[in-house]
Image 1: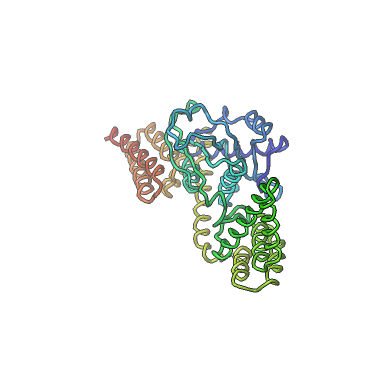
Image 2 (image 1 turned 60 degrees about the vertical axis):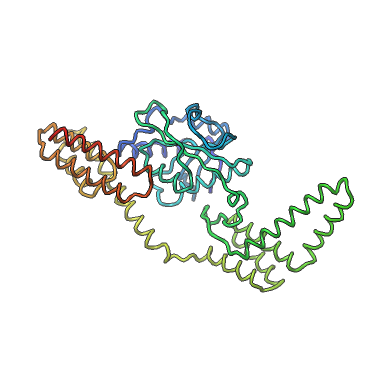
Length: 400
């Protein structure tokens, strides 16, 4: 559930931020640090009513700020539209709650919030080396706009935009259920919803003009009587009410409206709606099981690798260089997709004047990031991997 954050959430929010910063720094991403974001930033967000959290079973799992405030740096970018936009800031998911759809849920919520405010345009940005956020924005349909210097960081920030389509406005094809997961409705159900919506809209138009013209008032009464006296119209109304309850994840209430629609006629429309509800209650787990298992395994491996990097840093501080080398070597053997273990080993071996090992590490880094480049279908990430390959090739050239 996404809700507005309150002051009492601040401690949990800052714990999420601290854990996120530790994870970021483990792969040399210094987008956030001890200077930003601070608790005062989130207090301002709470006071303005623009901070939201995902809470499940009493635990905060993610946080995001959504408002209309654009950084001054946005003015130098080539945005598609020159109109009011919702802007996504300071988004973070608890590292222990990854692969649970929290990030997507927050992004979907931002779109819903924009729609409620009659805004169709969203903007956001992230650090260029923050691969996870860059991938999330692209996954959610955002388009790359350009680069900007921000927060005094060494590398550029990437900015993104999204224009909400008519389908997204009207939700004619998709609906939100089960923690914001979008599923497709049957065509018969979509058609019934559209027809009922059009009738309802026509009634309100006639009622509005009927205040000054009796002809429109007659139209209002006629359309209203048609909805309640016509079996087809009544059934379409119940179908629309069923879908509305599904959108609110109130499946029991939706099923009660389905029963009423079924009493009118057990026709193709009702059967299609029944199938949609069954898809929600009993999803085809087999369809996604293999992919979910693969992602879970990858995520577990990545988390272990991050822990090794953090432990390696601690061992270096304690003077246990050999212990740190062992952890970093295991990570590069597994092909860790971040630069930290390669950079640390390169520096350690150079200090030891073990140039052969330094060259081996650099060649391994080139191999890993070149493979990531070849297997990546996201242009921005491909560029990042290619840049990283170039960096290690230059270092290797200096040794040779």
